Image (cartoon, rainbow, N blue to C red; front, side, top):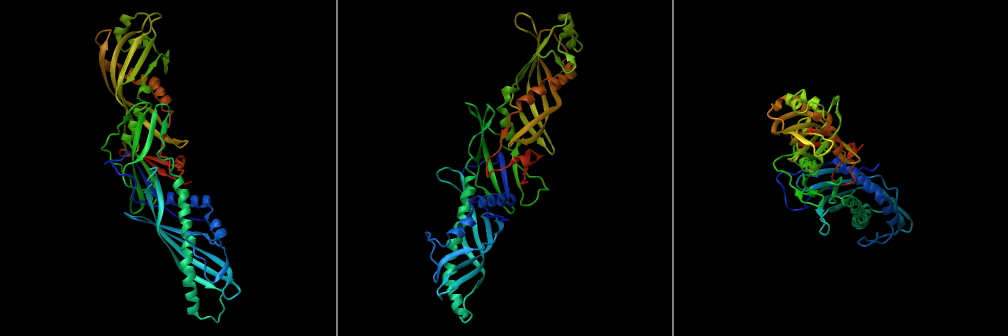
Length: 451
């Protein structure tokens, strides 16, 4: 099987952020796979062999040989090495047999073993602004050459013949193969700037934040995502969260890092959908009536001797906030919880209004190439009374009731909202469904896998 060719980077967009909202670390595993895929799609080896005898721009005919054909092309072995600050140096080792009618009058075969070396850089397309790969400094190095020339020919004559033909002709024959493969790779960046929908709430666009940086083991690509409300303004992503990859990841592997601040901005799109009015007759095992509430606040029984159904309205009045520490992610919600007594006629009557701050545990997964979240109740952090129609009471007496209510009644509503998936950057036909997810300090890590 073919292994690969490769990529590299040099310059893209200007403009920068001190701390990117998302970061891609492209290792050799992903790059090798994608270039191999591009090589298979382009059928470049078959084309090269079929067109070897046809005149092409920039390709000189082989002097002394007519009716040239190429056969027995060996499967290339491709070696990639990151050159920090420059790009990726690639060496493609292959071989072939060149046949034709020789200047001596008979059939001629030249068995060639060679290396093709080049540096691939990722540039910015002037028209689209998208990343585009381009090879530079392509050279062909002959490793071994055998020819069926007559044995009575002097070695100097043979060497002169080979030098005047193969050294001049092979670059024009082989180097375009690298360029054509990169054409297929470049197509796989075409959708990167397309806005990804977050349901009907808005979109996310992954823009490049700064010049990609070749490091010792990968290429670091910083994103400055744009989170846009549907038909509205952009949501600012807070600065100050440095993305750090935990130890233990294999050198040369690939990861996508998403900051807690970026995830917070995405969930801000959903903020209004976290507002709910709950009219359920029962939450968990408890009926939602004034009698149930009176077990915690006696004044309710005095105001409503006969059980009356309750309606609860929860409003989130601050943007949701995601916090992350090693192995644990929390979704913080600040808002109000107001309980009403329902009436057959007329508007419900407010019993009291509470300010609440609580958080939910978050589990991440990837489905259909989108990031998904599921939640479970974690803790009620604060509870304070803002108003009351039944007089003063100690809101702390409601702690257990409100905790159970949020856990049994509210979290399922949040889960319904979170069915919407969050878009991931669309590049190189990446299959995120295979990724292994981990939570680090302020960072969600998607360890990208090929199989």
